[in-house]
Length: 391
Image 1 (cartoon, helix red, strand yellow):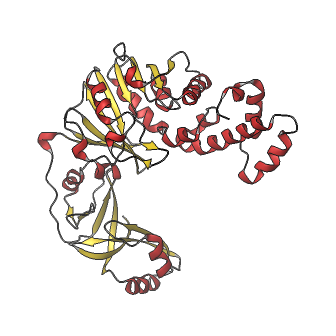
Image 2 (image 1 turned 120 degrees about the horizontal axis):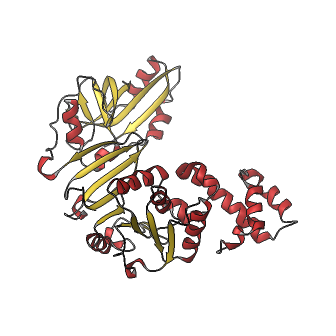
Image 3 (image 1 turned 30 degrees about the horizontal axis):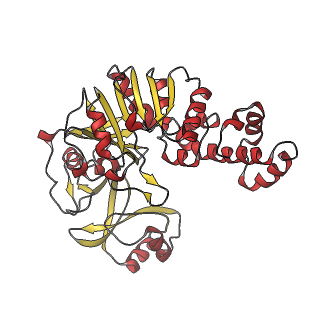
């Protein structure tokens, strides 16, 4: 069903209530029962929407039970915690209206509206626009969100205080798109739209090459609960062109390096008592040097983003581990060490190693009541296994 309207009718909403929480194993029985009284296509659409809502809980929490989704929309929509953080950034600068271009199912528009910002939400796909309208209505935000079906490159954004652009970074045939000029619309167009606005933010892939970032933008990488979720290019008031920032949610801890204060790569030093694993947003933002300086540490290898230090210092930007053993890469020796220490709960991390964690786990066959963390990495260029535990 490529039309959301039947699910918005009283019958459709009743079916959505009836199938809420249906387990995959029970779908056939539920569908068979409901098709006795309702059209088969509508029952299938309701069950499909219920599956999408269950998947969307991870991004939208309790709101997912009231919202509507498309499969692409679930995958591409912004996590609510990240969208809320961004909307608060807009509100803190006094932004009262925003043109949300490539709005998708409305995840960012919802966050903007909840921050009290009036939104023009634009997308060219009819079903996506229908879904965004349904979500605005379902969450009581229709008065603040106008959804318009249009080509974003033809929309006049001049009446709005700010512009937010979230270009499509996937295609049906090729999957994930890595070339920013292959985004839809291309990054160059999005940057030109941003530069015409008083204030703007462009959502981009976290892995964007730093050389593709325009000089006029402040670049920010955002992680949520340790997972890097996105990068954003900011333009306008309150932002520093050329700066790099990492923000860690939910704590909102942030680290910023301006162009005139960026540090060179840290020195490589012998492995100390502690190993620090920087947050992914810090690594993507190329701010490991700033964290190493804060910790009084250095790198274990010039190409590996692990920081080593002799002292344990608290930091929101990295997870600390106490290292008990350093081994040249040798699976038999590691297996013997873990067996001697009765390690059955084994966490395997890798950086700079071709060995997959599950492959190592199968080979060492951990058994016992104790736990340990193994790092597969390089130390001063040599393949190395580090054994330790969270500090």
